[in-house]
Image (tube, rainbow, N blue to C red; front, side, top):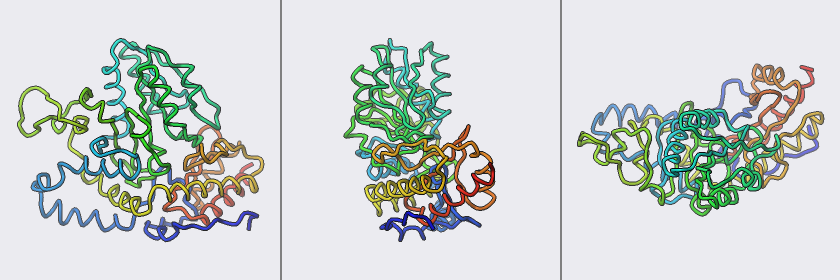
Length: 398
């Protein structure tokens, strides 16, 4: 037993809605891949039998062609603070980041600089580097402390009248730093640049208000806190004011104004659908739709409250049980997302040992143990078991 009793859990009744893992003692990696819902175990084969098998090609006219926009609107309402018509499901996070950045270059002619964090998620950096190489752009790197992240002041140091835009994670993938998104957005836009947020570690974890904050564009995956499953399709948000000028760099037939006219020449569809390229991933949207139903019932405010309680509890346990570890995440809950990282020289060996014991945290090079706590599927008892096992493994691998 520890000196820190677990807090009350008002969302405890949702825990049984998720599929239990085989031989799991503690799942502490919900910010990498969320658990599937029991309802998805039923909805996927039912879709194959009834919608796909029963309706066949008729399903496109009856429901599927508008599914990406409908589900996008639900994400917008439940998680993003976005009015309808600004969010859509399409492609992977990588492809959507490329589309939004490439469209931003076209939208800011005469400018040649892009801002990004030096320790940003690799995909984001790789795309910025390739676009800079292909278009003769300059990358303005932003440096931040390892246990923190971007601030308006750090952004202001790199901004100029040549800035096209900034691509930054709302919640840092390593430290869990939740940026002051409205203030950073305002700083970027004060120089006429575009603010593009990667919300992969934020959506479904922290309350977002993209419309109220005046965000230009955002993107995120759906297999973390949205529990869409491995390889689930991503989503993109484009503020309505930018949609008429948005130039999709990968034009495809379902992003055309009249996709079934099969005409020569590309004329983009009105609104957010112009961001679509290929056929919507209908099967891939099924688990995401199930999870959105749960998020809508629980409410993002309650989800955030439990997230803060879970991470605060985990920090208290780490302080007590692993005093030689370094917390590489914010202690201030107002600046902390749904996960945290602790640094310890034995991290790599300890995580490898724990996976064999049914305790699943995440290793982050060079010495980080990342603990991801998905509020709807993670119990406080699970956190206690996991941190106690981590403490033992770190000592045993010394």
